[in-house]
Length: 305
Length: 305
Ligand SMILES: NC(=O)C1=CN([C@@H]2O[C@H](COP(=O)(O)OP(=O)(O)OC[C@H]3O[C@@H](n4cnc5c(N)ncnc54)[C@H](OP(=O)(O)O)[C@@H]3O)[C@@H](O)[C@H]2O)C=CC1
Ligand SMILES: NC(=O)C1=CN([C@@H]2O[C@H](COP(=O)(O)OP(=O)(O)OC[C@H]3O[C@@H](n4cnc5c(N)ncnc54)[C@H](OP(=O)(O)O)[C@@H]3O)[C@@H](O)[C@H]2O)C=CC1
Image 1: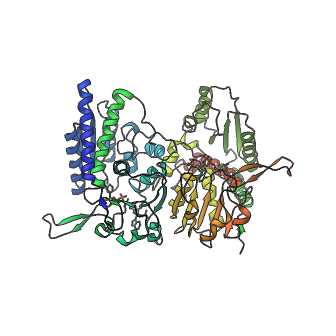
Image 2: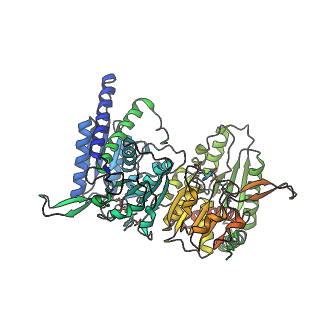
Image 3: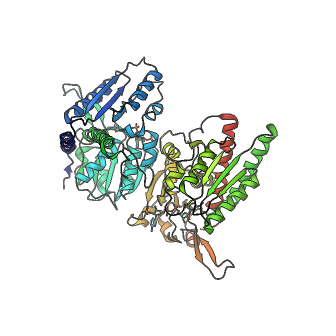
């Protein structure tokens, strides 16, 4: 048996196509309609620059306007906070994200929580985390990577309710919120982390595995031998490993040993081309949602389940 | 082998004794020191009346002042909200709780989230839930029942880090927050609920089991046969079952089949006399903490881990 790939690149393109269509349709009815995403960056980190550039390009392609505030690392916290306040008050701005990590000495929580909940399209602020973790919460936005994972599962016709799932990693941006979403979708979730003993044992009979730890090929193919034969694997890991055969000198590798694992499972996301593109697509979707709310609904997002 | 009982009544009395001592000590240094808990009730439900009376009495015994606002069910939401606002602004008031459930037609979330985070000694508001669910969050208060469970485990010398734990139930007041706390204490947590298939299988090798579902003796003793021999069971369930042999006509029963389970586990909480008294003790502890903050720290609670 060999499993199938979940083509995140393709599915994300589909989602972006839908967003573009929707924007065109709304603008047909109301030419003044505009969705605007503001991105704040406080560093010259190469990876951050790449991620921001990807987001700006993707936004542009679907017809979402952008405002890019690029501060140098010598900027004071106060200056950046003032920009957030200004964007919070600007009725033209629908979404505000702060590219992490921030420079040393910056209190990230201070910044993510400064963004108004109704513009917090990354879903990292206290309000949206609180609502996400309530049984019938009303978050304005779900965080993009976990939201993208649920979307990948649904568009691949994976039935989540009643499954046993395993999430490896408990970060605020991936592990913990995807565990909350899987739970809300009626999966029975186990959350493992670096203090978990005998992690391999957690794979027994499991139907969905999400790995977000940042350790190249940490999860071995043979660990899936005891998993459900219908097991679906979502590999969030994005690790750079040196590779002199590549022009750029490196390649991307996931947290899962892809070639061995695919032999034992039903579906698996590749790295790159799995979760990554969906994260960006969900950011665009959240921004459009925010603009539509201002436009029409003027209310909160319906509960996420 | 027969397991031991975790005597929650005793441990709670110990905690209350510590609170009383602390208050006496602080008042020795500053005679004006006062901790005040406000309780809002909007119903004449018998069980709510009982719970409120217990809380008022316990507060009084440790030297915490109380303000009890008892509204009739015909009160408007607006009236109750105005009282919360008044208590929020009153510098004398250190803790505010709203006895749940509220009457039909009342939006509970509206009320719990109206309480200022720094007076939300039940820990049910959006702010405190958000912080509880962040990796390095800074909640002002942890919700009382989950906090009491961790305290029971620690005072019984149960090592939480590295264990496998199972939480059955995913409510906002017990299941979900105790799962978050066990995770923060480095346990590998599985959260089961009514959509979980083959729940018995989840007991395999498990070291800590918390049951909060409200189904009398739902968890059978034999389910623990595959659990760790050192398994610790926390039974949160508080079910009234008819019992004509009792003067009052009923008795309390937990969610766990106590007499069969104790044969297979190391430690187990009884019902009554397990988690219940700890919940009230933690409410008092949170109120004292709040008063101490106003008095001295004037800051936030240190991170809970
Ligand atoms: N494709 C995308 O869109 C995105 C990809 N990513 C990628 O996902 C990965 C994870 O990111 P992020 O969540 O931010 O990472 P963090 O570093 O914040 O968290 C890593 C988590 O993995 C756990 N962990 C680390 N080592 C082990 C181990 N040996 N066994 C079990 N658990 C372990 C840690 O446990 P503990 O808590 O005990 O320390 C921690 O909870 C990274 O590769 C990142 O690049 C992230 C976001 C988006
Ligand atoms: N001692 C104390 O201080 C306290 C005691 N309690 C007691 O704890 C119990 C639970 O309270 P609470 O959390 O408020 O209850 P809720 O009714 O809010 O939640 C019950 C949870 O149990 C789950 N559940 C119900 N039936 C089953 C089943 N057959 N198998 C597996 N899971 C099931 C539900 O699943 P789903 O989500 O799928 O519906 C739900 O998540 C009650 O008896 C209550 O009286 C509560 C608070 C404090």
